[in-house]
Image (cartoon, rainbow, N blue to C red):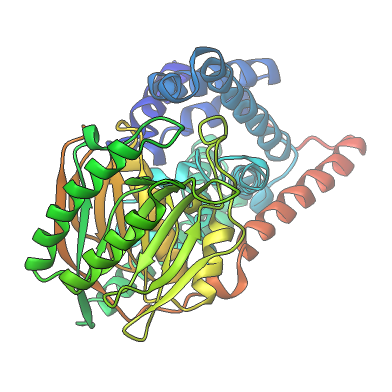
Length: 475
């Protein structure tokens, strides 16, 4: 029964659409209760199949982006690892009272996600934290801790309920850590409410335009298409004029909106400069740049005077899908009317440590050309938005086959439009300026490291305790 309950809760709460995310707070509880009170084999079996049921919500999406065999392997691997994490938590809980038992699951799971971020080619993708991206009071914690603060609070909540239920008949030995944990969760939410209220004060704003043309205009191949690029530029010229007429001062196009190759480089760049000057706007254009010795996935920024402000090259390429490109090695920062502004591209936003470099530059806002996979339109837009909360800057993100979003540095999506089915989308809105310095930007992954070290310490101390023959658990 625990397998079914946890599995179903995980399936509906840990999907890619952000629906029913509140259920994730409770999803691990049945598994943890069984794991902490039953034999290790039972704990592993119940955990594995519960997490497997939960991961099935991702399967069709994974197949669409990585084919069947890798998708199936990944779908099995994550539940396997999650089950081992539950067993590690069980080991600590069954040997210890008080704080170690309550903290075991949250510090182990948070520490695992931190290690996963460090070695995964997809960065922070896959974290349970992103399910909560629309829960504004909670996500404010990432300005202090990074995204793993959310992971910790989610898993701490599940741990508190599990430990409290198991020890309901001898609660006194857990009273202090359980009460302190509940107060910590409440304090995080109160902090979020206060931060949001403080952020309601009016700030300077800039009118911007976000444009994604119909997908039929875009080149989807891995080689340049001069004719298609010319047609795309013509289409975007009309849409740019429309956005400028609506008052936009800066316009962001999606990732690989046009191709620039050796044949069309001069004409294309000249046309872009003319567009910027004629419409008196800054243009941020995602380009597949085949014109040099090395091929890059680029974001070209041209000012309203026709000057190239920055030609940024995407640093984090999608494995297996962007083999034609060479990664960039520096962030893209420029001035917009004396405002510190930046540009990054799609996958770059999955890497918290990389985007933190923009935070250290004290950006006012970040422009992000992107190209999503239709089904992940909500998830990938929110992953990017949390980078802005971590580092205290607003974002203007334009995605092909995804969502066009304008968000502030508190993670509020103030304007949004959908292009996920490949349709033309044009969004005009105001982006908040000013920025907000954060603890995370200054100190980086301090919280994640603290969790990892705590997990290692608890495991080491419990191993020593186990060798002395101590087994405190009695349920």
